[in-house]
Amino acid sequence: MFKFVYRLAVLSLISVPVMAGTIATPAGASTGFQIRVGHLRSLTVGPASKPNVNIVGQKKSATFSPDTVTVAVDTSGNDCNDSFVSLTMTNTGTKSAYVTLGGVHYLTLPSGDEAPLCAYGYAAGDKSTFGLTNKKKTKTFAATLTVTFSN
Image (tube, rainbow, N blue to C red):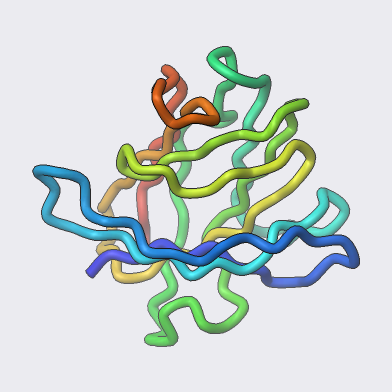
């Protein structure tokens, strides 16, 4: 089973709690995504050695920068239960960003916050696609982020 976990590696003094949940597999897909949620953190704290993707702009004009990235997968067998971080996603826009994973709402990232993400269960060369949507999740925007996994 493929997993993408977003978690906190180092807590900041100001954090926003986020609800935990499981995303169902989209129709026609053969793989589900399980999410264990940690905390969002302010931009003042972050792992410097991990790839970072910025969400630039807001609403339908928002983009991912860069729009492709290769990240490491947690192969420890701990399924992201330690401090492993595959990449961070930072919202540099002035409005909350509504991020999708595989076409399904994944997380709401407030302006100025960063989300540490941890992947496990992926094979080298596997890919996942993040996207952006509106607050009501009724419109999908053109921006996409393609994540390729390495081991």
